Structures are given as C-alpha cells and as structure tokens.
Length: 326
Image (cartoon, rainbow, N blue to C red; front, side, top):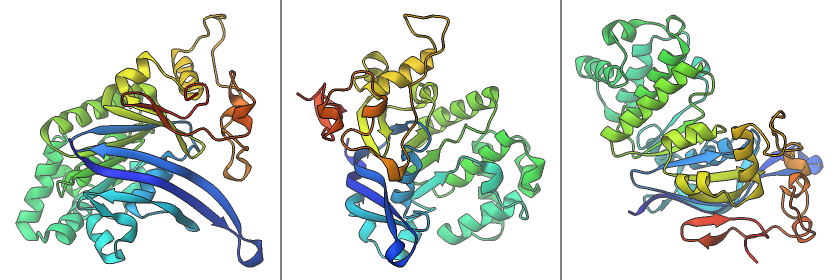
C-alpha cells in the first residue's frame, strides 16, 4: 500500500492577543502520521490533546489565530499547506470530506435536507435538476435511511440525532472522496445508536475504497473501526501502532493509563475505578520535557528535562517514552 496522507513534523500554534501583547500557544508539536489507501486510522486521546486540531490542519480550517509553524501535509503527493486557496477549496468537500461531532449544529436548521445535499452535488459535481435529486435520494438509501424521498424534504429538526448523523455521512459520501475524516461522530448519540452508526461505517468501508481518519476518545470505538491508531497527548503523538498491538501491549504510560481506565478497575483495588491522575495541561502551561511527566507513575528525572523522540521500538510500533528508547 502507498500513503494517501502523510504528515511530517507538523507543528501548529495559536496566536492570542495583538501587538506587543501577542502570546504564542503551542497546540501541536512535531506530528508525524500517515494514512494508507483504504485504511482507517484512529486518533485517540483525552479532550484537549490536539486530535481535532490535527484534522483541521489537514483541511486548512484552523480556527482564528491558528497557524502552521512547521511541517508538511501531503495528500496524494501534494503538500496541502502550499496549495493556493482556490485549489484547497476544490479539494475540501470533494476529495477530502469531514463528518463533524454534532450533526444538530452542522446541519442548517433553516434549510431542508435535500437543499443542503443538492448544494454539494451542484458545487462539486455540477449536477442539477432531476439528476441531482436522484443522486441525493440514492445517497440517503446508502446510509440506510428509510423513506428517503420523504426525508429529502424534511428539515433537520424532524430527525433524531442518529438520523441527522446518517445524513451527514451521506453528504460526506456525495462526491466519493478519497479521504473521509470523522470527528467523534458517535459522541452525542446514545449507546444503541452509536453501535448502529459504527456498523454503518464498517458497512460503508466494505463498499468503497476511501480512507478514513476516525477521531475519538473512546478506545472501544477504535477497536470496532480502526486498523492503526495514533495516541495523541498534549499536542504530541506518543504512540502509534496497529489496533491489535495497542490492545495487546500498550507501551506508553499514557496509553496504558487509557487502557486501565477503560477496563475500569485497578488490579490492586477492584472496588475503585481507575483514572489517570491530574489533567491535560493547557497549551500555555505545557511542562518542560515529556508533557506527560507530571501525571506519569513511572517518571524518571530525564523525563522532566527532555522530550523523548518518537522511536520505532518494534516493527510498525512507535512510542515517545524514555523507558522504551534507551
């Protein structure tokens, strides 16, 4: 397989304030990851670790004040950072699409489902009239929406959260993109609906050749959907490996903590739920050395002074930890 997306040494900052009072907040640091053709890459970590900022950088949709300070983002061999704005707008929504976390805020409440879907096909495919409408209804059928002709004319408020998310998935599939980014698409849904949406994703990836980047904080979702996983903490990739290796032998203390939290109980105290001590540092308060050092239960003095490299310690398994890269 060849890489569809390759991110090299990506760093992103947010500029706060103006003039002499401008403060630079580091958001991402030296991100390296790749997505092969037909592969699902999971990005996992706590809220505030940089998962969403990573995918927004790919799309060229950084928030106000956001800037890429270093690195390259290759899509099919072309550096997206250097693309002219018009070319990037042509890629976004056609060859690279995104499914957002909250379908209720992503869909325009003042427009019908059909009119929002029509716009995508008109802008990127040039489809009009009956051909456009037929393609929209076919897409709704693809995501297992019953009575798609009726749903086409509905406004978003008439649909449940799960149905709205199916519409968002249909819109993401409209132009048969090479890369689909899903940013925590099951977070706002109940457990039953989450399972249905995950089943739908697996069904879709069995029918199309698109690659996926799946952003989540839920390791259970990673187990269901992903082939490989990048664990992100405080703007750094701290571990990258296959999903099988992640669950069989997590090497970074942060990944291990996430696993123990998922399993729910300490071996030493089965009556107490386990949680990683402390919190993710804010961008303006990232400690010197390894950013996980203040929360790490196996920290060494070197960890507090130097950021470890992201090193391959086994074939296809990279980790950013001094205990693993001696």
